[in-house]
Image 1 (spheres, rainbow, N blue to C red):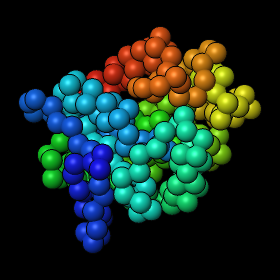
Image 2: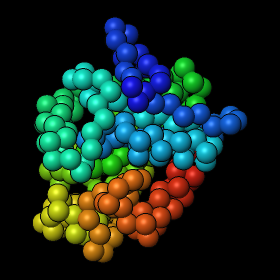
Image 3: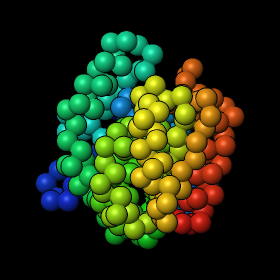
Image 4: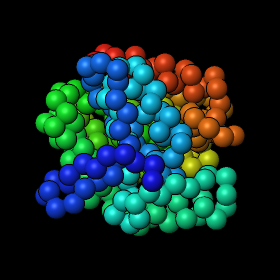
Length: 232
């Protein structure tokens, strides 16, 4: 099981599995690490550990726990990739946002950390956008978020800072979708968009062939500075 903590749901009747990494001292803030479709895998746990090393309380909730706790799949195995897509297709994103609200409340009320950010990847990038439009989180960052172009009618609800990393050769988010995102959000005072010329979906993955070291390091540097300003 890739998780080590259980966080109560909003109604208190169940618990959300999560991987939690704690800093050595008092947290400077908290970062929710929102998974891709492949689960709280070694890459996501590594990202959480890295945030803890930066002084943050890091929490990576298991998004698909209502379907099957502990999903951990490979993007490089065709069967497992299709299985991961199936989990995403069956995921109730509205209910998932309630789970994230529960995680935010747990961090603030039970862990005593006031400032909370969220960083998400792929499906998690979409969730980062939704978190910015639907919760009171302090800041959100999305890497190669999918379907954001279909949710631009929610942009007026963005009240806290949001950063999106957009690879221009993303084979899941095509040129038309990217154009719509820029046209919809370029002039939004709370939104910062960065393009990564020629990079593809998954360029910031911690492990595997999808990663582009230079692009990932640049995006991660921008994300660290963003959270340092808005979270702690």
